[in-house]
Amino acid sequence: MTGGTYRRVVIELFRHPKNRGPLHDAAASAEGANPLCGDRIRVELGGDRSRVTEARFTADACALCIASASLLTERIRGMSAEDALRVDTAWLFASLEGEPPAARRKCAILPLDTLRRAVVALPLA
Image (tube, rainbow, N blue to C red; front, side):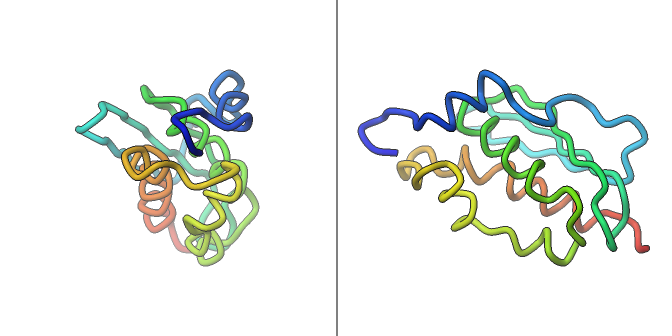
């Protein structure tokens, strides 16, 4: 993402995010915030450590944060906790069609950090 412009995927997922909304009866959840820009996110997961059956998020956040959360919650559904924890910034940045500028990197990574904390909180199978 150069020149301060958003990639097509960021704009599309901001306008039409996947998996946005609360997950009733979540097995695990985590909250994250970026005090520098005001992004706040909550990730809720269904399932257990053997298989993530559902992944949803709620957020009051910028376009980049929401797009990242949408991509990540879509990606880990059906994975084991071990595999979900292997999803990294390289995959995320490729999915966002490029690495965000340094000043916006935390916006993209906040959902990944929050998701990892929720995955670790999943109950054992």
